[in-house]
Image (cartoon, rainbow, N blue to C red):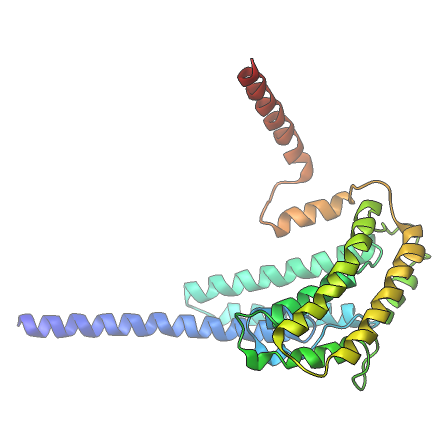
Length: 288
């Protein structure tokens, strides 16, 4: 009898484990579909999270790319909401809601930035990290050659691709006439200009360390493009830079929300002031 009870208990445990594995597999499959949809617009980001089918792809700054990204997110939200209505497993429902909220927040952030901020892209830094994450020594070296394809797409030598620097300048220049848009903070702009030569040289170091061949000519073209882009930043973009480091309130509130803070900036400011005064008093007491 004890043997039968033991076998029965073992069977129930196995069923429980399989049930748990089932919801995890279903949730993972749904999440993967979302990530793959995101990868069409943010391939470098998805590649850095291990989705190697995006290793050789690059994000676009072409006209309409932002609208297409938002439209894709809305389609994903609609699809997930339909799944949520049918889903009975509480854990899968929770994961679906997390995905829906994340996508909706992303849409809000994109629309806020578009309506309030002048398009501004720190390309030397973005490209350095793009290559650094792909050529990380912890990655499988079999992934490294994809960096050569990325390079040719960034500089426009790959068929069907426009240099990323030209795309970035075009997206900013087409909105220079919109006076209500907030430009980059002058302090940040000058910092980016100062760091750019080191980041550009750093890309060369990454390719050398990876042991890749045949990248030198494409890299040199990218260097020339980035140097021209920096000159444009120092002249054309500088004219639209702001002296005040503060961002629009709506952007602050949105940034807080994306970091998991539900309080508004107005609610946080008195708390911050009180905490500062308290800390200051404690430091004075120690000094005496």
